Length: 119
Length: 108
Image 1 (cartoon, each protein chain N blue to C red):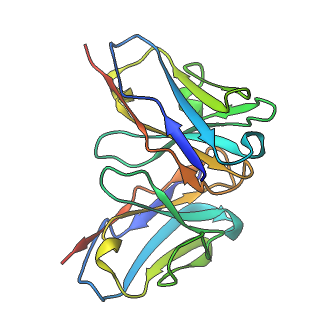
Image 2 (image 1 turned 60 degrees about the horizontal axis):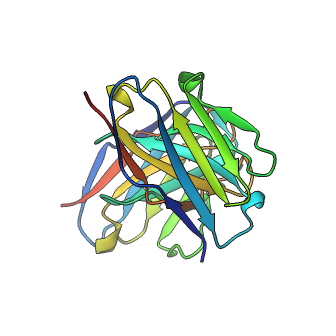
C-alpha cells in the first residue's frame, strides 16, 4: 500500500540545522510531487515547499527561502527536508505529503515528525 | 498570497446534525484548486474533497463540497461520532499554497 514513512523526533538547539526524511513506498516515486507542511503546537497548517522527485526541482515558501532545502534520492525513494538556523518558532510537527501534479491536492500524508527547538 | 478565512472557528453540534463550514478566499480561486482536509488530534490531515466538490477515495458521501470564486462550503449531511475533528480548506492553484486557519467541529 502507499506509504510515506517519516524519520523520528528531533530536539535541536537554536541556530542548529535539522534534516528530516520521508521514505515513499507503494507507488512510482518519480510520478508524484512531494510537499512539506508544518504545524506548530495548537496551530494550523503551513505550507513549506514542494519538490519534484523526477528532476529535483523545488519551490519554497518565501518566508523560508534561504533556510530550507529539499532534496531527493531516487535510489532509496526518499525525500529530505533540511531547515537551518533553527529558532523556537520552528518547533512543530513536520509532514510530507504527496500530490500527483504540482497543482494537485495532497492525497497521502506521512504521520509527521516532531521537531523541538530549545536551548 | 491568497488568504483563506474559515468560519466559524468552532461549530458545536450533536451527532446526526448537519454541519456547514465556510471558506472565503481573498481573491478568486479556480474551483479546480480548492481542497478540504480533516484532522483528528495526533493524526496527519486526511484529504476529503479536491477540486472543490470531488470526494477523495474512500470518503463517505455524507461529505460534500461546493462553491466557486471566493466562497466555498464543506457540508457534512449527518454528523457521525468520528466526524468531530478540525477541518481545513486549502488552495493549491497559486504559490504559496495556503490553508485556512481551520474550523473545529465539536460535540455539543
